[in-house]
Image (cartoon, rainbow, N blue to C red):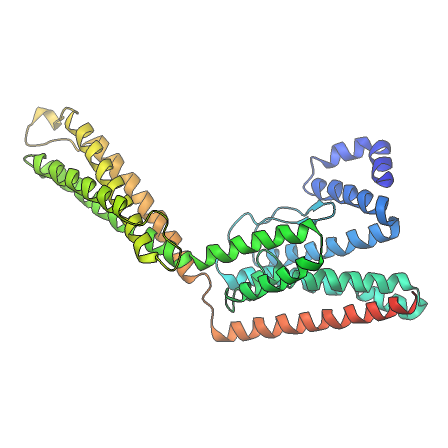
Length: 366
């Protein structure tokens, strides 16, 4: 921490200026992390670790740039690592896998000079750098979202995430690191959300269907002679939906009772749209009808109904976009899946060999 404090004290003006530059946040957080690592492990270890993390993150940035995806600059978090965030969602899982692969690949390249330096000098510090670089990037290849490995294998099948959770869970038993527990928790939520995606799509599809019915019904209202029967029908629908909600299981078990759960959600949507339609009818009926040139045969369309149609159309389009995205996001040709699988296994294998290489050298100097 002494290095970080010294730099902050001596170069306050430079840090103040950097805050307003594009990569100012990266540099400042990098220095803070360097100070934190150096205070505990020494400056050489701190510099090596920050360097390895930095190159890893630059690999993601380069990959994102090649795919024309905007990202934030890298942001360092002491004892956690660093991260970048995407400012837009990749079009598919294959693109996301490309971005994720860039990090560990750059991470592999980052410690190759240390291999050469060790062979030339036989200085054990360089073996430590090799081991550390290989371990960091190999850990990132564990097939759990949000780690790079989870994002890579999602092209193959998100069911692999469950295997990754078992691996990470077993590792957490022998590790007291809060970071491992945090990644495990995030991974469980990611796997669960993906596992429940089909069910959510069913609910969203039903809501989209109700919205289309709601919008089409609104267009017919100006032609009605009376809204009495319509309001009675909507009241009956709301009552039936409420009874269905009350009669279905209060806490259905996911997967096991999905039919009951879906019936309950559909009833909830029926009730909401029946009440929404009733409220809109009552508001519309209390508005005076206006005519063009005071001609009773030329009524002016209701602004209220036009706005309601526009909102319904906007929500229908949002739901359609979301449904199309979730249905197609993880689809990829077999050729792409084979390429991703081979690239993943080769990278994991090479990193494993270098980790063993660094570990064996360090054992010699114990």
